[in-house]
Image (tube, rainbow over all chains, first blue to last red; front, side, top):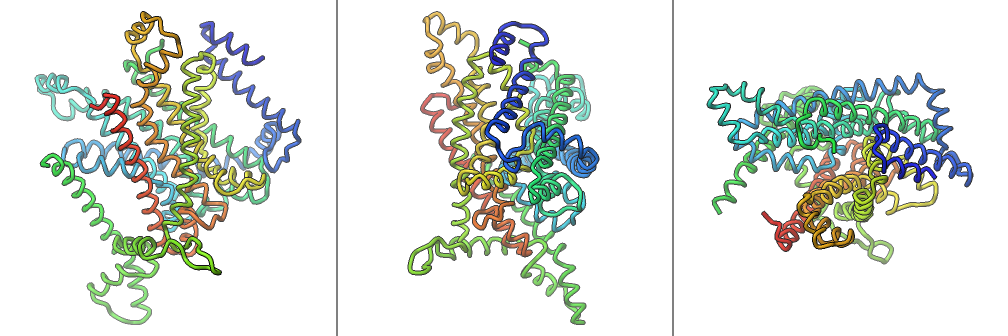
Length: 267
Length: 300
């Protein structure tokens, strides 16, 4: 029935349909989930119903907020900004030397494919249980994907455009700011979007290896031990909201700043 | 030949610099321990003695590259893959190959499941507008959930239901590898231009024929690019899935036991083994990509 409504909505091109269709689909999934749990009497230890999760979410708001600040704000966000910032600066440095580009890019690509999460236990050993070890893990995770994207992006301008800047007697910095950074933006945003999820994962997984008695990874570990699955799912909901929020913010910035790019066209 | 040398030299230089930095860092991080020990014994040590000691500690804060290399060699080539136990041949848990296999099997299974699911979903999305509008936003949203962080729970829950061993791990890697495939395939299936599609219309081709003869071949380059991302993600997924369950076998389990007992050399060798596996998998896909594209005449 819901699907029928969706097919109908998708076939019309009403302005609000773009928003409504995914919302209806998501609501359908939640209702299905609730129905399955109630109908087959699935134990809450295995899969709690959405209503139970919402209840746990509402009754534990202070705890969730403290965990959120500890993990996302003090760990993931700080690491994200640091890691992406250093990577963009490194890309600018590499960009001036073709030799470094040839050497670093394959190595960078190789490292980007590695299970960097595996360095979490080591970094926790070095930097202790506090947020600084989480920041270190996040920086290690986001650095290489961002670097590869940024270097690719800086190559994006055409020789003819660079020659034009040259005929204007533009300095290196002027060319960088007025031509090469703007043309690199789509790639930079691609890197930034990929890194949002990586940053969250890094911060939460690092907490499994050692954390103070607060934080989302810590809470998940503890609540699994207590079989309080509704609380675990509430934490997951927070992580999903934070992840979607950060991703959405980047996508919004991208739309505002790279409105000229073909991928942003509305059909 | 000259071109190959021109490509390899910079890489070698960069790798050399990284190893040099690593040695310097190892010396710097392990120094305090050596100095402490010497102070406790009341011995003065020379700079040379200090340096050699930092390079050969039992449990260094950062093992030197050669220590990791030796550990890797000892646990792969230096250990038999099978050993005699109670009168039968069993896999030897001291061999890293055994742990690597324990990780690779669920990785491959999950990768295959994820790829097939991703392709099916992409085909549905391209051919059905309602699917496209309802599923695509959720596919993107599903990836913003740090699944890796909750992988442990999924495993624990599935264990409670009675699913153990290969399947739960491969579900995690399937979930991680399906998304890149969906995105890449949707892009690829939509890559034929209006002119190509019009040509097929003038041939009065059906939708199925258009799919088999135009859309699918056009999507192959995109598919391979996604597969490379997907397989790396699948491997990471399996390793993380091994972390919380107290798994005794697999590269993730090696990382965990290493961090419990402060066996830093073991942690680093497990990391490198994972890296080598990832590199081999990605380069195998690269080879498959090159030969496929060559046969299709798409090789540039």
